[in-house]
Length: 337
Image 1 (cartoon, rainbow, N blue to C red):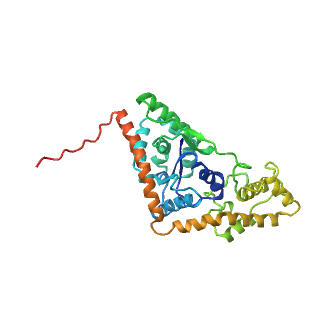
Image 2 (tube, rainbow, N blue to C red; image 1 turned 135 degrees about the horizontal axis):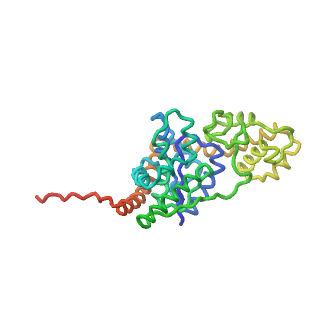
């Protein structure tokens, strides 16, 4: 089976955009590939974090993946910092990555412009991302447009090190998920922007753990287009088109069928029904999340995942150490009594 790696930062919040656009695809992909899903807590440290909140968010992000349908008995789910080889290989990759390559990363330029203090970790973040991927001899990586440049760097470094030291890594490809109706899930307040949990306006996204009344309120306040016609037309009616996409993905009903059903109904009825559809979609996820919040449940799952991940990661690191000329750690010989 091909191997797939995906990492998600521990914000503790995942949106219906994350779920409908990615995670639901992962629940199918886990039966077609050897999947590694990692909560990348080391990446979160590139900007200041509250330690207690980071720990809580790390566990909650893992819970949300499982509650959304990723099966820990099928896929490997673990926390990045639980496998020290991520940080170790990152240094070896940094020593084979050029300063100019990292300086050209557009995400570094964007993020550094938004922070008063810019850490070295933020600059070398792409090398750690490359280590995450290359540790597991990954075949494919699900990436959005904002991460494609990082994957290209990962490929370049893998090829460079393979040419210099021998065949150390597989060269990963981008995983392109099946195309969903309408494409990306957009903001409820600005349908020209992608739905994002980092938005300053919490009304712009629906989180997987939002209570039913909050979901209803957010959908009631979602912006609409001029006129009252419920029609899928991303150019002329981007707001209603986005809501139609959410409705279709939440229920499995085609956009064409929804257009027919709500012809002449107006936005109020449409939004009210959409809210109930989203509430119904998230109810089993929220119930499963509560079960995973029982003491010790998620910790046991993550311990098991880390053991499997670490075994593969150690094999990769040992191969790279030997190829780069690092002396193996000697085993002490016990004195004879």
